[in-house]
Length: 84
Image 1 (tube, rainbow, N blue to C red):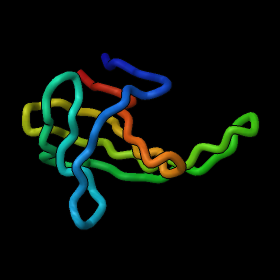
Image 2 (image 1 turned 180 degrees about the vertical axis):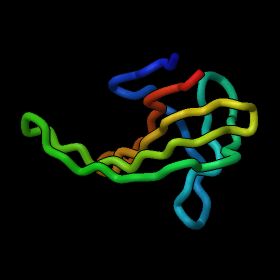
Image 3 (image 1 turned 135 degrees about the horizontal axis):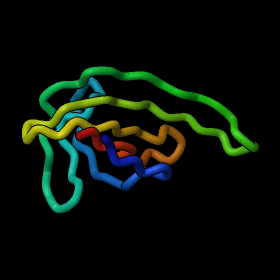
Image 4 (image 1 turned 90 degrees about the vertical axis):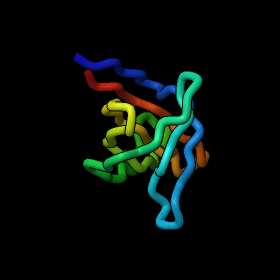
């Protein structure tokens, strides 16, 4: 089972020099990233609203498995899914 936030739940992200997320602030706590399992970009137009995002499926040091994305147009980060 997983939880999905279709519009994304805003998060604050600390990135390394390589541009990869190192930690993110979500639900009142900083979550250090322990592993990035997958990474991909999506650039698509849907009903004239273009989406350009970079997704990361990652695990945190405290045991969460999440799907987060970086909105490359706005520069904002979001948590899209939390896996159980």
